[in-house]
Length: 439
Image (cartoon, rainbow, N blue to C red; front, top):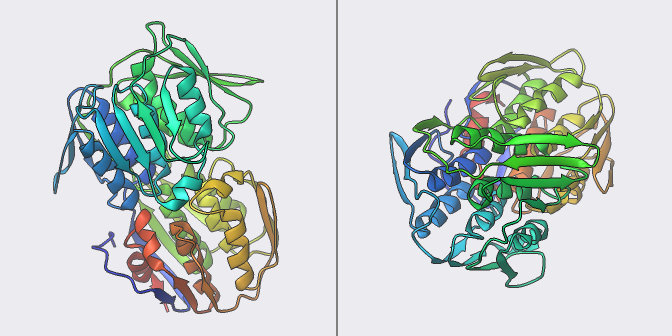
């Protein structure tokens, strides 16, 4: 079943016990790819048509922001067409509301820093709690005039016209969010001096597959970025260049969204096949299938699909989830039914997402009967857990709502509070879940 037109969700939604699950799911477009492609198409010279664009809150705020900046965008059955502005946004003054879309806030802050205009970027209250200081510090080191309109280190931001300092080098920390590095990379070709721009990331760069996705997409729009690694960190070499329209470009299915159905196949018999992301995907979250395989699920791959089914026995694992932070949330629900201890490491970025996801997941897993331990960048629990029916608070976090729906595979009723929050990335999630689950 492909995602259908979303309906209005009630204040609470009951997911009935899932007896078994099987079928095929056509994934919605990737949020991460959609928002990157929208920005690069807007900056490019020429017209790009994007197909399989995700229609959700995070992508809608990006489209609305680009329109407010003067980019011509046409949406119809043939795709989303953007007439690029060749690096110069027509509107030099705008107030942009970006909801809770980190991909939009971080990338637009970088793209507008030297756009020659006056801009204000803001979002929902949670966005004002999500850090952006590492990116602002790097932009201002290059000569930008980005200021905080509220608490230092956090949105809202005020951006004023600025001149580049002419430096060939800039440092940016990547230990809090890879989106800071991705935002600076995408702005890089247009702010680089003639000899190019070297972006140094000292120490740790988390969520590296997302940065690799950014680099791959920049190549699709005509800019080739080179990376070198050293013991002290990594350096990206960005040429001074103009983005070129990509013609017609298809957005892959969302690999993070695939994780819920891949996990369901492992928990409820399967087989469940997801279409739109597979072995040839540029998205790191397809690596969630390897985690499921390590836990004992059966996994099969194709170039643009992945299929899972239950194995003989699910087992706990100690796993570095740094490359797959969003999909790793889903593994906590699988761990409820696995034998032995599951410890997920490298998830410190959870604490600065839509909510403090380590704390929230621990609280809600506890409602199901799990004994959960946590640390600064890890979460652990012992299974299998005799799961019990529960009402799940979602913290206005789409991924918490989708993850905990899977607990119904334990033969219990799960009540999801505020199911509407899935509209951030997957408005039709519960409809698609019902299409493959048998109660």
